[in-house]
Amino acid sequence: MKLATVFGSSSFEHEISIVSAISLKEVLTKVDLIYIFIDKNREFYLIDTKEIKSSLFSSGEYKKSPKLELKQGGFYQKKLFGDSKVDIDTVLNLVHGCDGEDGKLASLFEFYNINYIGPRLEASSMSYNKLYTKLYARSLGVNIVDYQVLNINDKRDLDFEFPIIVKPLRLGSSIGVSIVKESSELDYALDVAFEFDSDILIEPFLEDLREFNLAGYMADKFIFSKVEEPTKTKEFLDFDKKYLDFARVKADLGEIDENLTFDLKTEFAKIYNNTFNGSLIRCDFFYYENRIYLNEINPIPGSMANYLFDDFEENLLNLIKHLPTSKEVEIDYKYINSIQNAKGK
Image (cartoon, one colour):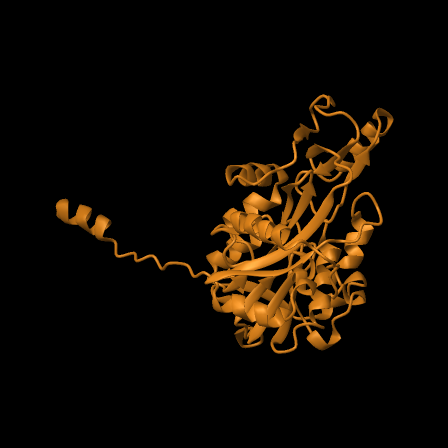
């Protein structure tokens, strides 16, 4: 199995994607792992798997690697006597944030008939925008925390009492997220969030809640990971904490009630249903006052949430066997021919 990991791209989470990609080298040992890097200009580069390291990208040295082009059926490298197709069986979309999670790469892979792991276009739309995630979850009967959406041109009037949490609407990894405890902190928190997005999400900050992470995918039936309850040393997991977690290989498990575990898996299945077929996702839940709330959907989780599975590689190979395929459209020009025949032409 030759698996190409596509990572990087023009995203605020560009560096996080690099960390995720490099970390997979330690857990994927049964496949031939191929690295395809997308730089900030959206140029594709074939990276030597043996030589991959973070400094390769920060120094710009990656530009010495062969450039690739995306064409029908896969990636191609220009050579002296024509283009050479890179030998790949499946592509793993590991671009966090913009380009990877908003549907751009999914559209390209679909258009060029490339077999890939990752959210399809509709799933990307539902999970990339936090407002759409709220509406999607509510339509499925999944609890959500109350919210308010504020545009950069709106008056800064709040629907909630303090404390609140402020989030850019289309960003992950806790980038631009702030907890606001009093009015004097509000303008600064909004300014920070608006640096990353023209729309932000505001929620009441719920204290004394429990957080749970659960990953899974569909392969004839739902396959679930272990349920993780992250250790909270702060009020919320900020960017620094999440950034360091992208390369981790161990989950925070602990004792979790069997009934609660069952309920979390039930809510996960509602979210995943058929919308996220072809992807391994992680859902983050809140447990507050004996109710489960969806916090967010991670359609391309950091390091693919490998640390939540006993045998991540076997699960990834299992998912590859069950990837959805596009239905071939038969085009026979019957309609045009019938018109031409009717006109005698």
